[in-house]
Image: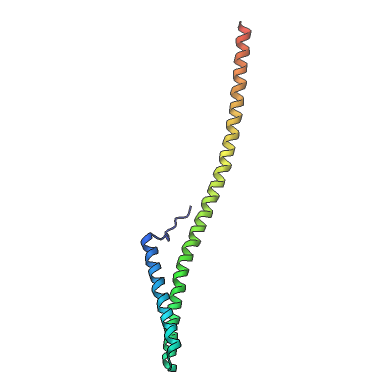
Length: 118
């Protein structure tokens, strides 16, 4: 089984959530002021600011998606392990059933021998 070192703690997730919120708010403000601005140079600067915050938002999403993909891979591996274990258990159950039949046959043989001795 693969060791998944990219799992996030509650604190990590809270920080990523905060980063996302800060960047989303900054993106909204940049877009708002870009609409209000009159100078072309100011609009260009605000567009650059907006692009940076949008890139940060996408980075947050990619980080979380990467963690989800790792979790899914981990779950897929665990499910495969469970399926293999289920097959092994079925083999054991078949073996157990055969052993019980053998024991029943042995008991019948002992009963027959006891009847013959009497």
